[in-house]
Amino acid sequence: MLKKSLLILLLTLTLILSPISFPALAVNLDTGAKIFEAQCVGCHVGGGNIVRRGKTLKKKALERNHVNTLEAISALVTNGKNNMSAYKERLTDAEIQAVSTYVLEQAEKNWKN
Image 1: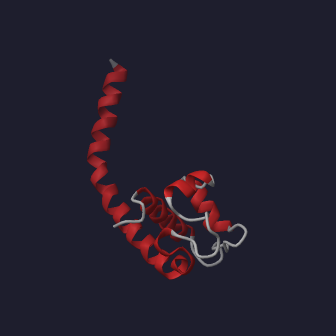
Image 2 (image 1 turned 45 degrees about the vertical axis):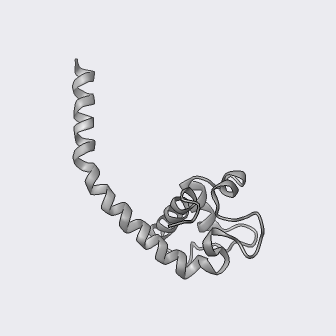
Image 3 (image 1 turned 30 degrees about the horizontal axis):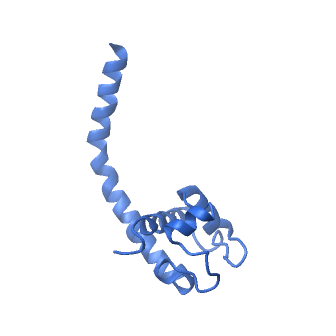
């Protein structure tokens, strides 16, 4: 009975608190889009890559290159790799998370609005 009560409580809290997280996600994606336009679009316009073919931000390429999670994208943005510059000195942790979230979201939508 205690497990059932706890489950009901958790579900209720989730329903109550979930509207709070959606505006935060929208702001995060908007911020991420602005950062992407300012910092990334020079090489990654439309999720492509003008420097290295095959290293695009498209879903299949992210999966193939094992960069298809928020953590992996954030690490790549933070530390860079090969031709990809590191942004840890240029962006805050929050900005890196925002742009990484944006990239992942766009990849899921195949970079179509």
